[in-house]
Length: 509
Ligand SMILES: Cc1cc2nc3c(=O)[nH]c(=O)nc-3n(C[C@H](O)[C@H](O)[C@H](O)COP(=O)(O)OP(=O)(O)OC[C@H]3O[C@@H](n4cnc5c(N)ncnc54)[C@H](O)[C@@H]3O)c2cc1C
Image (cartoon, rainbow, N blue to C red; front, side):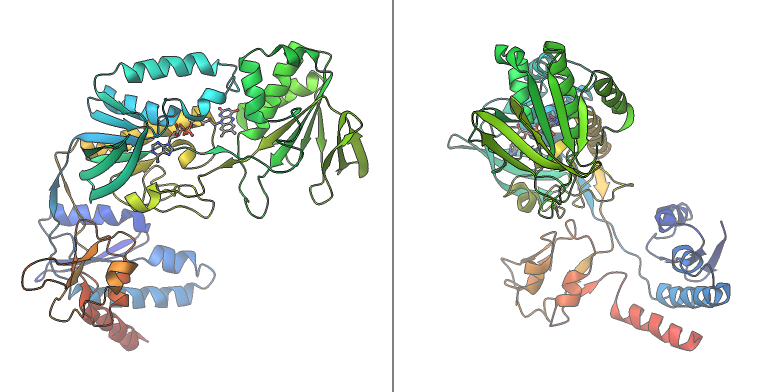
């Protein structure tokens, strides 16, 4: 690490021109605090990412750029002001949305640490998608374990379960949320400091391959139901064929649903266990039974399950020939057209998020392009949402198997507890501020802010003028750039500071 600290002794400001990641900025700010200096009197010239990384093959120009960046940082920091961080009390209780395995696991983890939790489920019973699943890839019986978890949650005095509950409105912010739920016409306002979203996803219902028209065509979960019920008709089957990636990895839904390869292999083995003589075919595009699940794939091959790669660019056709189901496709390895007439056709369909997701606008959290809740940072904050105090886990975040949903639910609960364990929290000082004298009440800032921080003042001499809730503000600067009246400024990024940086750059060139 090469760090050069330029400290103005009179003003007590610090510029760090550092070959360290931007993520180390908080460490430098800690140093400022330890030295008794306001941490906002700090500026970093990020010469690692912006010079040595991107111009590694041109050291001369990289050094020149590093000098310019450092001069700009010095010019800016000279105009920095000490900023305050609002302090907030935290309500030490949690709200978990979704009574599937993820939501119940998160609620139990919170309760075990002594935090009161409200668990909201829109359906009349707990369980979510796991109600439909037969066994995990390790062969654990899902139904008995699910029953045990539901009992634990329902009998936990620290968890209030609200079934048939619809969330109608959400107010507040990290530490002090107010969520209103409607249960059969009765409204209830729940106060909580953190929110965990575990609202899940569901099985895609295709309108192809005779699904819904022929009872011999099932989805993966429908076959699980038959396995759970020990359906005697399964014993009679002479052959079964699975089609992978139905509704997944196509232009409208480009993501992989992650569980389907292992799910089909597991169910193929379950059918083989019922009737070892059964012919079983799995038509796949790419087999993705990752990690130790690969062993299941090997076992399936040893037991005679046939894996055939189909060419999804060419026609895959399911029809009826006389009384029989008939599947026609092109084997992409031998490049021949194939025809199989199975007794049972199982479609490994995609895991899809809800078409309309009311929770995203209510809690002001972002969805990714596929419609799942998006984490704040895939590596550094994988269960946090960008909105403070809101965490995600399970299928609501992305398709994943039960073991990974449980791990993520525990991670989300633990992250939530890091907030709940504090009596108060300090918010960011780099926030936007309005000047009501300049505000023309156009409302652009109110419309454009992704965090709903600006609103119109309702009372007093500035009624009708925009104001910013500094607790909600993330300092993104969107409102500042959009304000046509120049009525908003972002603390730490004022016009004079930006201009000083530009002047410093001009002088340096
Ligand atoms: C088709 C399919 C096949 C799968 N196959 C396998 C497999 O073979 N092996 C495996 O390990 N895992 C499999 N999974 C994944 C497994 O089901 C999940 O990882 C696990 O059940 C955890 O799900 P969850 O709790 O995150 O979500 P879910 O089980 O979907 O639970 C979410 C809950 O939230 C509720 N909810 C939704 N919106 C709201 C709202 N606005 N307010 C209140 N409540 C709400 C829902 O009613 C539901 O009860 C499969 C999933 C699917 C869909």
